Structure formats: structure tokens, C-alpha cells
Amino acid sequence: MADILSATYPWIKGFHIISVISWMAALFYLPRLMVHHTEQVGLSGETHKIFAKMEYKLAKVIMNPAMMATWMFGLLLVSTPGIVYWGDVWPWTKGAAVIAMTVFHMWLMGQMRGFQLGENTVTGKQYRMMNEVPTLLMVIIVFSVTVKF
Image (cartoon, rainbow, N blue to C red; front, side):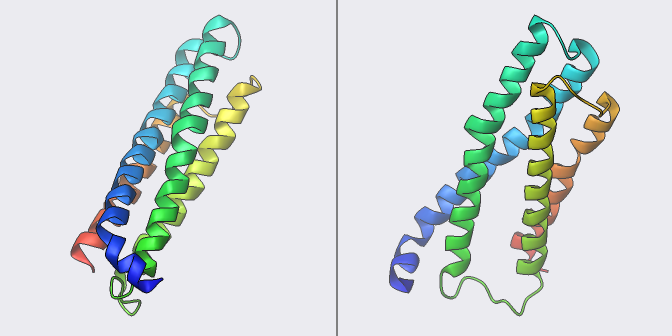
């Protein structure tokens, strides 16, 4: 298995990067949709149904598969011999940030379900603030991997 991982490492890394970009795009966009849904649309009517459908499709068609692919390719990368030295700090900070990103993803899924049911308790301002979470986590992840602190 180690030989296969080593031989396919560049391909796995490429697919991991593509998956991360797709996941991040969805994590940035979904809270923005929720800001507008909250502030300008409300929880009933035809426009509400359109927004709820857009949020659902973004979450189910792009965000969930991208997260799963990111995890799958990421786990293959860290399983490749010689790639990660677990005595360093950076794999642990990256791992913690990826887990936090996944928790944020799950929180967004819960919010999306609330909109589907015509329920929402979060303000537009709170969604704007939450929209900064993936950016902060991305900074930790990128610098963990590139600077390897």
C-alpha cells in the first residue's frame, strides 16, 4: 500500500487541493446566502422557497461531497510514508483546524435545515460574523502546512 501511495502522491495531492477549493467556496458562500435569506427574504413565500432550495443544493451537491473528498484525500496524504513527521506541531494544528472547519460545516448544515423548516434564530449580523470562521481556519491550515511551525 505504501508503494501505491508514494507513486500516486502528486495525483492525490492535486485532488485534495481541488476538493479543498470546492469545500471552501461553499463554506464562504452558504453563510452569505443565509445573510440575504435572513435580512431580505424571510421565512415564507416564493423567494424563501428559492433561497431554501439554493442553500440545500449548495450544501448537498457541492459542500458535503467536497468535504468528504477533502477528508479522504487528506487522510491518504498523511498515510503516505515520509510526508508527515508527527513529532512536529504543524500536523496537529492543521488537524485541529480541519476538525474545527468540519464542525463549522455541520453547524451550517443545521442552519440550512432550519431554513428548510421555515425556522431561523440567527441574525444577519451573526451570519456575517460566522462567515469569518472559515477564513480564520484557512489561515491556520495554510500556514501550518507551508511554514510548518
